[in-house]
Every structure is written in C-alpha cells, then in structure tokens.
Length: 174
Image (cartoon, rainbow, N blue to C red):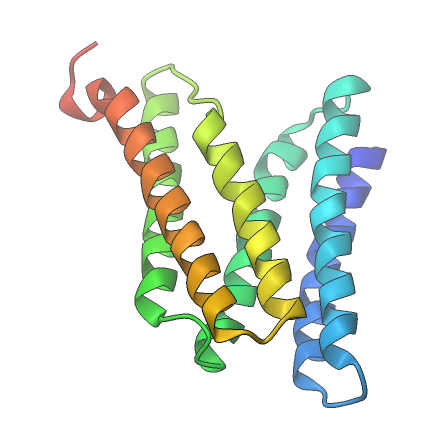
C-alpha cells in the first residue's frame, strides 16, 4: 500500500473518531473535533498531491478518496442537523447532488467517457470544508446561516454545471 492510500485510510479512520469526540462531553471537545476535522481535510489535499506528483494514483485511491470525503462532510452535516444548526433539506440537496454526480460519472464511464472534477466542484468542496470548520468553531446563528447558504449555492451550482456540461450523456446524444 502506497503513501497516498495510507493517508486516505487514515482519513477514513478519523471519521468515527471525529463523531465520537463530538458526542462525548468533555472540556473543549468541540475544539478537539474541529482539530480532527481540519486534520482530515488536510489529509485529503495531501493524499491527492502525493498521488498525482509521485505517481501513486491507484484504483483504490480513485474509489476510496471521494467516498472518504463525502462521508466526512455528510457526517458533520448530520451532526449540524441534529444540533438544529443546518436545515435537513440542505443536507438532502448535498446528498442528492453527490449521488447525482456519481451516477452521471458511472453512466459516462459506461459510455467510454471520464468526467473529471470541475473547477466548481473544487470550489464547492473547499468552501464546504471551510464552512464546516466555521460552524464547528463558532456558535453564531448568523454565521451558520451564511455558511448554510454558501454550502447550498456552491453545491447546487456545481451539480447543475456537471449536468449541463454533460447532458449529452443522459440524452443519448454524442
């Protein structure tokens, strides 16, 4: 197992630790959870960098890296919904976008095409991770509202962009 894949596995293992730390009430548990989340986010960038720049791209990494990212982000958002700091419908939009884009990519592969991550998807991921950090760090209703809006807009925009740019895959036109 190469270094990039080990970092991805480390991120997967951080997810239950992140959740446990959020639920166990001890002094500064919220800051500890924030630190774990930041470490997981940094590991995402690090494993991608290592994989691309040191020729460590593998099928395992292509499969597990996006799953780890999605589970980490969705786990945090489920917590926010349970804390009533995010409306459940925003979480549904995020999950629907992730499932929709994943399904679109599967159909594209079946048609011999690969849909690479677009710029808007990268902006969506980065802004979502920053917003999750802000929500974890600060308990400010106005900030929660702004972050929820940023997450919603970037998620919806990037999802629409994927479908508009790749509509020919679904319509059967080449």
